[in-house]
Image (cartoon, rainbow, N blue to C red):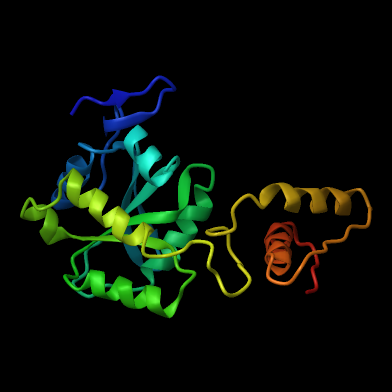
Length: 228
């Protein structure tokens, strides 16, 4: 499929020119199928904790931006095992961190050979209300031709609108659901670097502890010391 490019240079349908799609024959066909609705901008195979992962990035067009506020690229991850292994989410976390400037932090497309993947994702969401929005598909759905634009949008609605992304009961300790915190965290870090004192005040349950967790994440790679 010839890539469709928007005015700002975003590839929103088709495959980016010169891109070599990674994966098995079936996985390549699935990625090409999705390229009818998204732009495929990146594809790679990586080995992580003794497991090989094939993944691509999908870039949404204006329709998805308007309906679901999907501005960044979406991680498309394949899980070729008949019994889905949750350790794949460790790879998801690593990849989202590695490509922090490109990927959506909340939404992931997961294509699994496990035909019970929807139930397993539902169980995961019930266990952890702070988990990412995993949009599950099966290899079989694509092989039987049951995936089209309507199916994709219905799945997005089902998983996006089934959860209030702001109704979190405990402090947030990762970037997935803490929106717009970078500015305030950087302000505190600038004060620290310049030797100034800083304070954070607010009512209960407004996110003070979450900001402190974010500050900790900023300091850890720099070998700083934080006590909470």
